Image (cartoon, rainbow, N blue to C red; front, side):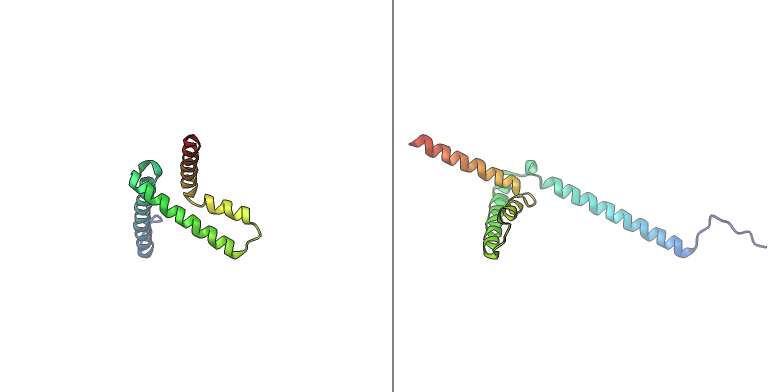
Length: 112
């Protein structure tokens, strides 16, 4: 009689384990790259030029979304407007816009 080892695995199980391990390693590397990319895109890691470019792009996107909202005739206008202004990273740029607008009004007030 042959001696059967209980811990042995079949070739297909071995291949599946190898495939799963390679897949896990690739996913881990991809996730690390995505995390690094996300960290590089944070506001504190951006240059002034990138911040101004992102500000203008987001502001144009906000205006486009507001125009689409007005043309759609939504019943929840205020709720949809808040969703538009707080979508993704827009809240940071909306805050920057409010600060710039307040400086503009301040300088207009002191010039009178």
